[in-house]
Amino acid sequence: MAVLDPTSSTEQSVSSLPYREPLPSDDHVFPLTWYAVMQAKALTTKPIKRTLLGKDVVLYRDHKGHVRCLEAYCSHRGADLSLGKCVDDQIHCAYHGWAFDQDGQCRSIPAHPDRPIPDFAHIVAYPTQERAGLIWIYPEDKRLASPPDLEVFPELEDASFTLSFYEAKWQAHLTRVVESVLDIAHLAFVHKKTIGRRLQPEIKQVRFSVPSSDRIIIENGGGLLDYVFPGQWMLKAAMGKSGFINYVTFTPISSHETLIFGYAGRTFLRKMPLMNWLFSKQSSKILEEDRLVVESQHPRPIPQALQMEAHVPADGPQVRFRQRWYQFLAYEEKRIMTKE
Figure (cartoon, rainbow, N blue to C red):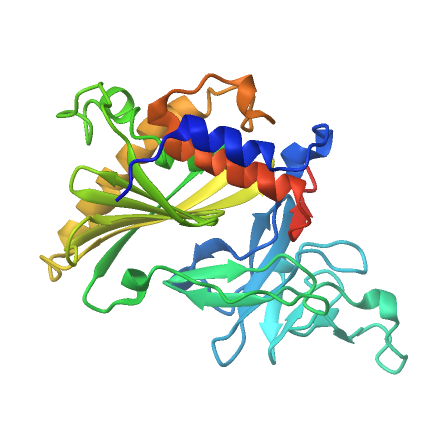
C-alpha cells in the first residue's frame, strides 16, 4: 500500500477544482444517494415514521413483505400517516380514511366515494431497498428517480458472519461524522480507555490509498479502514479473511444531525447470544467516546476550504475526503437539499 503525501496531493487536487465562492446553502446540500433509515426487522405492516434530510417519511410493508415509503403527511389535512393503518397494501389516514397506494396515488376518499380523485390528492413515494438487514431510501420522487445500484460490503451479506447491531444519533454534520472514522491520530486520546489504550500518540507514517475517487483505504496496524463515499465504512483485517469486522453507515437526518447504523460482525462464538450484546455494547461505547468530541466541533460542517483549518501529515485521509466533498459541491453531481 502506498504512503501518500497529503500536502502535495492536496495542492494538486484542490487547484484543479473550479473555483467559486462558498454558498450559504452548502451546509445544507448532500449527495443524492441511498441512505439507511432503520433496521429491517423492526418494520412490519404497522406504519413507522422516520426523518431523512429534514423530511419526514412513513414506511410500511405490504402483504408480500415489500418495503414501501411515502411522504409522511396526508394531502388532505396534513395528518401523520404513521398514525394510520395498512389495508390491502394501502395506507389509510387515521383522520378521514384517505387511502394511498405504494406509488403515493390516492385511491379512496371515503367522504366522496363516487367523485373522481383530484391530482392534488396524490403524495410523493420514494424508492426503497432492503439490504444488509437495513432499510434504505433513495430520497427522490419515485416518478422521477433513476437511482444507482446500492452497493454494500459483501461481508454484510455473508452468512458466515454473525452481525451485532448498534446505532447512535449525533448532533453533528455528516462531514464531521465521516472524518471521525478516517482519523487515526485521535485514537490514543479519545479512545485511551478502549481501542486506543495501547497506542502511542506519535504517528510516524499514514499508509492509505485511493483506489477510486469514491474510496479511501487506510492501513492501521493489522487492520484496513475501508471508506466509500459518501457514507459507508468498514474495518477488517489487512491480510486474509477477517474473523471480525466493524461496519458503519451514516445518514443525514438534517444539516445538523446524523444517524449512525453499525454492525460488529464475527465468524467465531456465533451460537452465544451474550456475545451479540457484548459486541453491540462495546461498539456503542466507542461511538459515544467519539460523539462527545465531534459534537463539540466548530464550524459545524467541515470548513469550505482546506486553508481554513490546519493540517498535518497524519490528516492525509481526511484531506482526501475533503477534496472529494469539495468536488461534490463544485461539480454537477446529483444532490439534495435539506428542509432545515
